[in-house]
Length: 312
Ligand code: BDR
Ligand code: CA
Image (cartoon, rainbow, N blue to C red; front, side, top):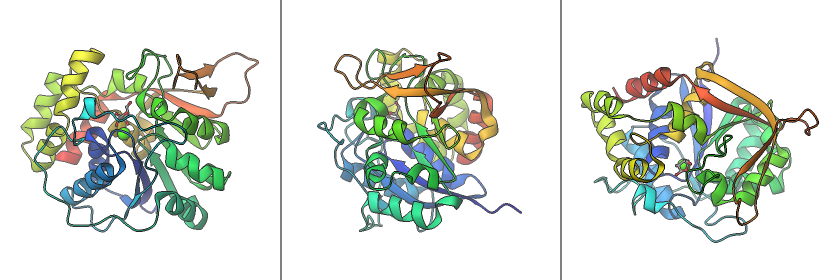
């Protein structure tokens, strides 16, 4: 019999990261071995606090939360509090966490876990790739040591959410994303992009109603922490409700059979000013060997059902 799916989750915990954590905690047969946090949506201390609160709220048990890099590799931190709210959780009234962050730095934890038990661990990255890139600088084989690596990253159709062509996680630390691309192999590393989220993970008014109708603390939590994102989505990105990019990436990691369309390709990350964070997908026959699997579409109803089950 297959044992539990063992996860290490790297996250800049704000609204949708929190729902992704909840999904992982509440899906049967899943065990979260460690959470590592990174600056991104919110400054690092806030990301760690949001991760602790969410894990406690979902009764995750004893999951260590390792704080990691406080800023991108080469650039100043530019958060997305304008999207997720000043606290990253849409101003939801949440208790103080009772637990405290682990002492070991996220990068050390990633290196240790990959080296000691990587073959049994799946890494799910939900924020800027700073921690992963920093770990890769010390261990070039890091990605290959894991059973699989899933990242919420990129927009393969060049339709961006933070700039005209870039997705936030790649834009926030493009040099880190470039390091990850450079060390990746498409058999091991899968990116679930904002293009998939924009199509398949939007919480339309009907979906929001179905979630709220569950009337459970977890459903209320999942909906409430996305209040600011809902405003941003409808006012700026032009979606009919908040989208859930990190939960979609988590759903694919938990159940890869949800994938409806994927491609393998050689991908690079643009780091120049105008195209910062855009991913360059080379589909020519003469392209360098594929380094990433890009998930382009996901079973949207299947995803919604997973979310409802997790919040029920
Ligand atoms: C990504 O950026 C963040 O705002 C979300 O948490 C998600 O990881 C979507 O582009
Ligand atoms: Ca995130």
